[in-house]
Amino acid sequence: MNDDDLIRALARDGVIRMTALLSLLMPASSGVGFGIKGLDGRYRLFNREMARLLGDGIERLDGKSEDELLPPAVGKQLASCERRLLDGAPAAYEEVDLPVRGQTNRYLWLKLPVVGLDEKLQSIVSIVHEVAPPPASPAMQQTLDRLQRANQELRRTVVELEQVAGTDKLTGAWNRRRLEECVRSEMDRLNRYEQPLSLLIIDIDHFKPINDQHGHVVGDQVLQALTRLLQSRLRGTDVLARWGGEEFIVLCPNTDRSTAAMLAERLRHQIERASFPVIGQLTVSIGAAECHAGDTWEEWFQRADEALYRAKAGGRNQAQLAPDAIGPASTLEYIVADFVQLVWHPAYECGNELVDRGHRQLFADANELLAAILSGGTADEVGVIVSRLIADVLQHFADEEQAIVAAGFPGATAHVVLHQELANQARHLAANYGNGRQGVGDVFQFLAYDVVTRHMLGADREFFAHLQNHAPVRKNRPPAERNRRPPRPRVR
Image (cartoon, rainbow, N blue to C red; front, side, top):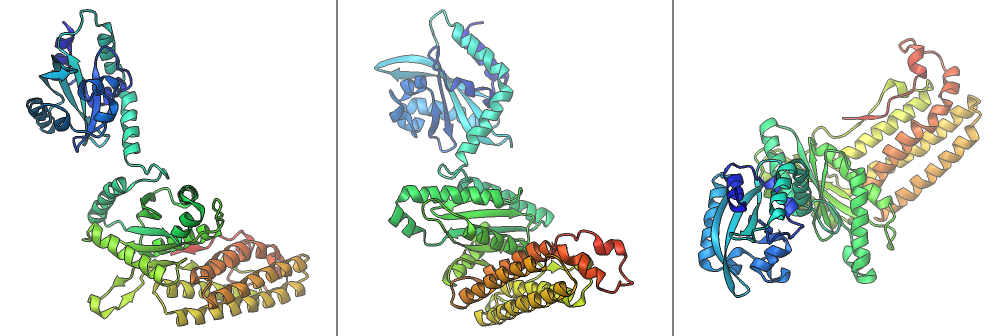
């Protein structure tokens, strides 16, 4: 069997498939042209021989279609090949007359489908080989042998190619095309299984001055650093994509609007506290929205974009949640359902009623503030809550210091110093919030994380035993529960 018969037999029997062809891309051996073009008909990858056969140079072939490069009669033959592939054929071929450098020769043109792991057509492979090659052609036989052995390895190559096609070149995050493909799949999952789905749009505040003052190289470095930070802080199921310019999107499967709001605020705070190349500090504005059953992608994205606009218009460096309408849109009546809450647990109690009451009050303050954030309370309404919150923190610190000194806690002096540091931070935060230099999210972050999670469930645990020794034993709590390590605050 000669080379031409062997190629025809392999194509006819479906032995040569797209995943076993990419090893031909790099070598240009034995006059075999190899190329891959996208579904738009334009060549994306090709070897030197293919460039010689079609374009007489790489620059001429790159991004071109066969209709632009070949005589109409040849283009018609090849279009017939591709129709057979679209109808499900494992391969298709035609013999064509190609004018190459002023001389027309007969070539066998083999086309094969490039199918991804989802079995959908991704691209089309072309192999072009002269019908009457020189008698000695051992390299061709060796190439065909390699094709039959390389299937598993080349499947990974296909995945890598698709990864490159779906990745933003500057940041390494997904690009818009790949995100929109994933969005469609997740929206189908929402409609079939009623799993919640949310979206965050993240926009860098005042990014243009960064490029104007420091140059686009620094701007690119900032984008890359922000991408790394976001990727390190997102959950395993979240998807990060660069939407364009300084705007990013986070797709959050199995996430309702309240959880999305918490995630948005956490990311905003972490970005604000990070240090970026050359510029140092950076802030972002975030809009979040949950997808509703029956939403189109455009409607869902528009609601998140409107929330982002409110964050920008409200002074930037904040996260806004798109509201859920509960009546006709004209009524502008909205509610926040199932918002995130810090949940009190008896194991957080130390046995001193004054201290425990203060801790419970801080939990309540955190939940009240978060409810105001998520429900879009006015600046005056939120300001009242913030003032009361700061006052409760300072009063609690004073009550706690009195209790631990009376109980003889050896570390009382050091603990008072911690209180002083947090109190100074609270006063500074309140002043900055009052003059508009810090957002309400900063206040919530301070209360929920710095005071409750880090201090109350960290440093405060050191004096619990001393307070319990000076407090009456409560009959409704087993001793073992009073001394065990408390669980971390839960949210619901």
